[in-house]
Length: 636
Image (cartoon, rainbow, N blue to C red; front, side):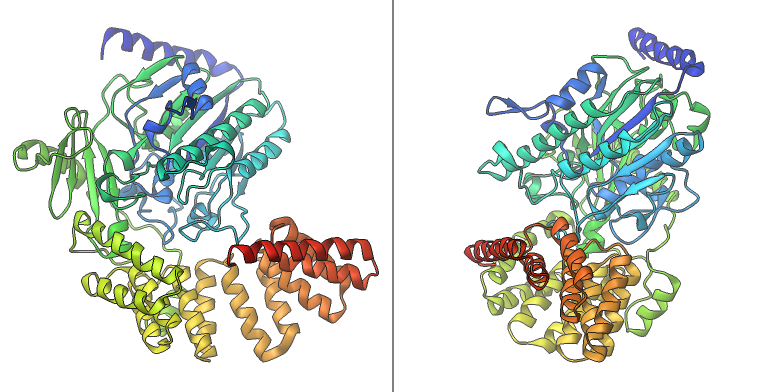
């Protein structure tokens, strides 16, 4: 290490030792979902996108070459909380497995050291059932069920998650250190930024989402209460976004620079100000670094070595990254990569090697001409695979038996693809987008024809099968739809939404017992799945009337669905039965969750009319009519 860097690292260590007798600092961890490194510090149309993160970097240290371990939210966050690569902690995809209970987490260590701990996440992809809640006194993953993003997970915006975090922080005793994790999801597709950042192009809208997130980060940091030991702030991207490079519009299918390169900034006691570290580092080294800065180096051992250049005086080993999504979702080949200071090797059916110094866009594959470098980095991949473990499935043993009885696979880990190189598969996604647009345009028959051709080319592709089944059902071919959807569920029986699709098809065909079994399977996987509770409630209404339906809906509400639709239906039943107080309360809760939902306002108006509160009834009914008219303008 250069002499000046040695002095800097020594100064950090000395400062850490000197603080040992002082009040410990608090820790604020900001995870920036889907945030590319090159969109931090950038200006668009003369306006800085990220003034808050830029100020944090000036006050601390920025790592300009930080890489994520996976371009997927849940595996990347498991690494950020454990210091382990995905093979080591076992969570290698979204939505199917949970962090093993024997893996130490940053929150568990700090909670054991007397820190107050709280997490506020912005997407149910980080739902507590996946194990990241361990060690947190508060784990706020409360989102409105109907506010779903493009991938189907409930989510909330930066303003809402900042409000929730600040409300918690305001109640923290001033003499207690705290660990606060705030997860911002806004840069994730679809890009729909508020305010002045609504650009015409996808790239501009993405930039607007980053800018909105940064504004809320500034509000959070400006409003957090001070603590006697000060606070360390870490801001890190979980993964990046492709934005069309290599043919990928978003993320998950490739392990190139745009998908893996993320911002990483540290600031606070013990962190040099105004410093930029250009060494290539893996973000999974962050928790060990943070424990060192907090004076807890003894607890940092299981989290691996710290970030090179700050607390360590030796270069970090090559960074391992992977994506199993091409295999689990599309039936293609998984991808693994190892990146050192100069080269990136990607293990794929057609292996790739890139000189990142001369070819940062990764367009010239050197695998054939530099086999020694490829073999050296391939060894890193093999070493990581040798440490692989299987994380617990979200499917219980009982559910596994249920899945087998329904004719699916065992319910264990989803199948991995074995064939198509994602470089070849990516072109099929453009055809897929065109077929989906036909469904939206009201042409399901033509969509089904095109989707059937895609399935013929790629029979292990779950999204292709799901959309084909939907198109077949919409075009009047329910038997074909059922067969298609069964093939999708068999490929990955641990995905709750696949069972929901099956349940609807069986219910439409009046196979109610099978529909119930599918809804129940969905709830075994996701107890807060509002759509499944509504489905079961509909079946209960058929068999036992409104009273039985209400009983199921109450169970769904108690399970924490936070569903405006569930609450509104409860209010409708209560209104019909004459329980005006309960109907009024549930309608109010529904409007609080989704003020734009017309049905909740209609019920509130009818309740007010029965209570002879004419002014409230008039106000609610006028609002209901206005919302209904506004929705009709958009064809909704």
